[in-house]
Amino acid sequence: HRDRKLILHIIKFENRRQILVTHDITESERIDMMRRDFIANASHELRTPLTVINGFLEINAMQPDLDSKIRAGHIKLMTEQGQRMQGLVEDMLTLTRLESVDFPVRPERVNMTQLLESVVSEMHGLSVGKHELIFINEGPDVMGSFDELRSAFGNLVSNAVRYTPVGGTITISWTNSDAGPKFMVKDSGIGISSEHISRLTERFYRVDKSRSRETQGTGLGLAIVKHVALRHKAQLTIESTSGVGSAFSIQFPMPVSIA
Ligand code: ADP
Image (cartoon, rainbow, N blue to C red; front, side, top):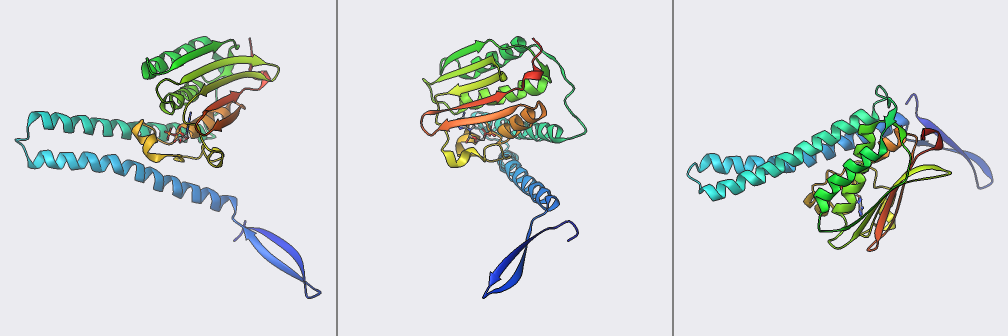
């Protein structure tokens, strides 16, 4: 293969020098593999809700006199599955756009107070009465994309809500230090054991698939967060202890700060 990376090891065997040739997969092969995985995963994720919807449609087509309460139940389930598919397709489109080199961030001054308040008010809607919420807003405005940062912060907050049992505490903070501004979401939720942490930002990687689906997860949230951070030259850090809680933070570089 033209651009296959060759690795030559010179080894000594029975006092004769020999050359052992191995190869590494090339970048293009790796990208190809990732693309295939993505298509396989995405098709699988879409197939499950589609099967549910088609099943109920079939029942209703075959039984036109179905009890109206039962029919209403079917419609509710089909609506939920339809929403799940829509969320998935939207997250896939977002990821594709974020990964595209043709669409770099067009930096604008991001009003952080407005952004954080919209994230926090959405969170109130999701978790009202279930969690104690602490909100700290001490950081400056930054240059970046309002929509992308809104989506990244929103994903982290919605994860904290979804993976923290009732009665837990969630702290959202926007602070500043010599290193630059930092966004952090800390929860007292289920936590993540260490062997999973390095893989969490892979598309469709989930620690517990059924819990993720039950709570409307697409498995793409952290992949989106990682790309938004990269596009803003910021650093995503994940700290977590299983059964204790997690902290996800995005550290922005100093020059981004304009306040
Ligand atoms: P999902 O839609 O499944 O939540 P994400 O990409 O947002 O997808 O997250 C990937 C996985 O990381 C989740 O399925 C979950 O297992 C784990 N995870 C993310 N955030 C948290 C959190 N705050 N606490 C515990 N586990 C989390």
